[in-house]
Image (cartoon, rainbow, N blue to C red):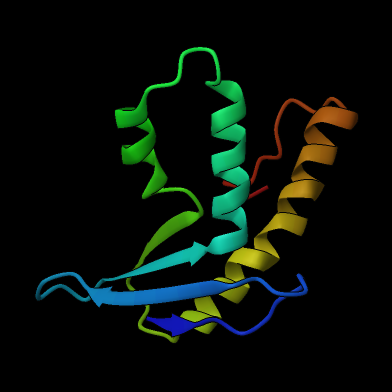
Length: 112
């Protein structure tokens, strides 16, 4: 596991694991952010405080703060994480056009 350099947050505590998928020209990039994991676990516990299930919590706990990408591009973990971080401002713009301006769609995949 390698530590991913600091992004916009003060201390992201992000680690990465990169693995090739068999003999294919594809890679998996797995990231775990300790601060997001803590936040997601807190939200889970608040949501399920009345019907808490220890077994379900144990299974989900392993996934808190984790995101995995599959790519046919072999590159360092830092590049993949930076691309992921840059995606959110773009998503905000799409949300603005679709929700605030009430557009039906963004027509991202058409030639027009």
